[in-house]
Each structure stands twice: as structure tokens, then as C-alpha cells.
Amino acid sequence: MSNPLHKRRDFIERSMLSALSFIKEATLSEEYANRKGFLQSLDPRFKTISFLAFLVTAVSLKSAALIGTLYGFCLILAFFSKIPIRKFFARTLLFIPLFSLCIVLPTLFGIVTPGEPVWSFHVSGINGIITRPGLDGAVLFVVRIATSVSLVVLLSLTTRHSELLKVLRLFGVPQIFVLTVSMCYRYLHLFATMVENIFTAVKSRVGVVSQQRHGQKIVAWNIATTWNRTTHMSEEVYMAMLSRGYTGEPRLLSEFNATPKDWLWLLCAIIICSGLFYKGYFL
Image (cartoon, rainbow, N blue to C red; front, side, top):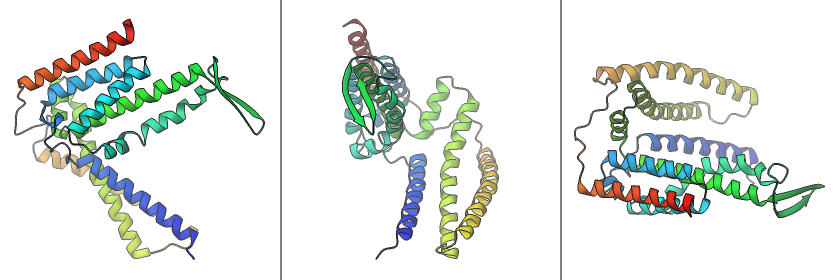
């Protein structure tokens, strides 16, 4: 018969290693950006401008149906950019949108948002009423968050990190901000690798911890060690970047070149945003 404590320990171990693996993949993996898809073939400047327009449209619209249309268009772009839809859902729907749903749950009820009742229930002596304004507001909020997150993730997946940083500088973003983002981007991968190595080393030398006090000492020691190592590592990363000539300005071997395809895409993006705004505010 399996031990429940052993199952819980295995679950914690798998969860931590999966989280570290996700951080490493999300920071330095450019697998999708190197694929020959539709968005990958566009000029990063035009692509960033168009996605910024889509993002402003998603935030400004007050119709969940219109925002859902923009979300559907985002999924179509992901498909033609050769991004697996299942993985795209895992990156965009399992964290921030679900968290936003938990935040907006109280607004469903009549005690917070009065209005036309849609559904009532009675649980443990408590009467609850879900109202139409509360339901509409919650759906609008969640759809807006899901669409905004999907647009940002799709842009980051289909654009190389160095190209995106260079576009930010071309758009006038302060150099200190770009430098900070670049350092954090590189440091996160090193930090995840270091934590993974520490966990493997402790497990290979200590094995299974049976006493709670012993486990607390190991956790406290790991926290102190990780803090000291990360402090030194951040300084080393910065010095290594300076020694290689990095001054805060992203450098690329290739230059940005606009093609008729990029101008046509920008025109289509403007037409889509204008059409959604027109339908949302004048119809």
C-alpha cells in the first residue's frame, strides 16, 4: 500500500521541477520565434505596432462578443504562426485569466451588483442571487483579460527577445528600462537552473527527510544559500554583459527591413481595430 506522505512529497517535487522547467523554457526558448510562420515573417516594428493596436482595442471595447471576436482572430494568428493551440491555451488560460475569475466572483451576486436576477440558490442557510449586470460584468472582465494576455503572449512567442528589446528602444522606451528587462530575462534562466541544481544536490546527499525539524533546517539553509548565490550571480551577470560590450542598446546582426507585406498587415490591423471600434460605439 502506498504511503500518503510519499505521494505528497512526490507531488511537491514534480510541481517544483515543472515550475522551474517552465521558467527556463519561457525565458530563453525561441523555438516558436524561429519557426517559419505568418507572424514570424513580419517586421518586428510593424508587428509590435499592430499588436499594441489590438491591445488598446481589447481594453477599450465594452462588448464581450466583440472582444471575443478579437480573441478568435488571435487564435487564428497563432494557428498560422505554427504555434500548438493546446500549448497556447496552457500559457494563456491557466494562470492570469483564472486568477481574474476568482477576483471577479463576488461581483456576480446581488449583494455587490444589484440588478435583474438570473439564478438564485440556497446553501447552508445562505441565499445567493446572481444578477444580470454582475454576470455581464464578470464575463466582460474575464474575456478582456484573456484576450489581452493572449495578445501579449503571442507577440512574445513569435518575436525574438533581442528584436523585441530593439523595437522598444526604437519606440523611445528609456535605456535603463530596456537594460533592466534584459538583465532580468537572462538572470531568470540562470536562477532557475541554480535552484534546480541545489534541489538535486540536496536530494542526492540527504535523501528522504523523515523529521520535520531536520527538514526545516534544510529549507532554511537552502534559502540562505540561494540568497547569497543569487546576490553574487546578479553582479556577475551584469559584469559579464559589460565585458562583452553591452551598453543597454540591443545589437542585431540583421537590420529591420519593411516589405509590402508588412505595410499590408499594418493596414489590415488598422481596418480590424477601426471596424471593432465602429461596431462597438456606433451600432
